[in-house]
Image: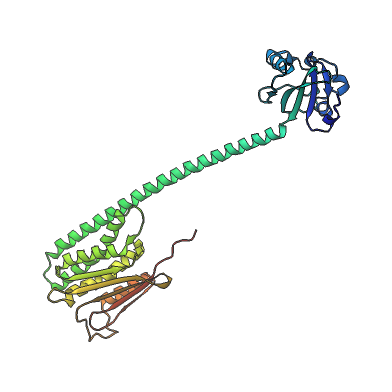
Length: 354
């Protein structure tokens, strides 16, 4: 047979007859095993590799000689087949396919096609190692995220508890002020206590909203102002007054909500006490989110206002409101005349960029 075609292929080729005699041994096998073609041909392959005498190989090769289907021996399960015979040569990971062929005289032969899978196996092992490393990193990140989530939930609970206790503390303070109010005889002292009470109401409402909010450290402006207005109506006894509150979807954090509440509490208190002598009137609060995230809150009432008020005649309430507006990094302007129209403008902080 002409075996020239097998000389240039990068695959080890060995042909044996039914007596296990080597009929052909190509250059690739010669390089891998260290056994020359001259030393290999006409030798019993079992003399070179004695483990081929095992029943598993003998039975499989007999089927090949009988014309049966090809047999495949993987490097994982069948180490040692065609291993290097010299210590200076590397031991390769070989995949061996044995097929049935016949020579010119139709004698059965077994053709061993030997492939070196060392590089592929190393790549597979490296991929498995990288997969293990990636899986470990994913697991570590998952555990870290679980720890962070748990810490966040614990912090959220603690923060809600803090706001709840703060709200209760303000409620206790309001009760004390109410008791103190019963002992006063000077109307000016009662007015001071009432002013403090109304301002504490506005701060208490902030912490109440934050204690009930499970998703954010912010409160809805419209809900907050409406609740505060109900508190003031009950505290001042002007239950017949009407309060109209309209707002764009605006949410305020703690540092914004308290100054806004203090300003509006002062304005509402003045309207309820001075603008409606008969107790019946309208207070309007309108909040809009304009260009460049600028919040504009317009306030007015249906009272006569103070037409004779000079712009420089600023009372304590106005000065406090201007100070609160400065805390908001905004402006406060109250015009004389009917309705005491007031404009509060301040920027809404932009969310952090990621």
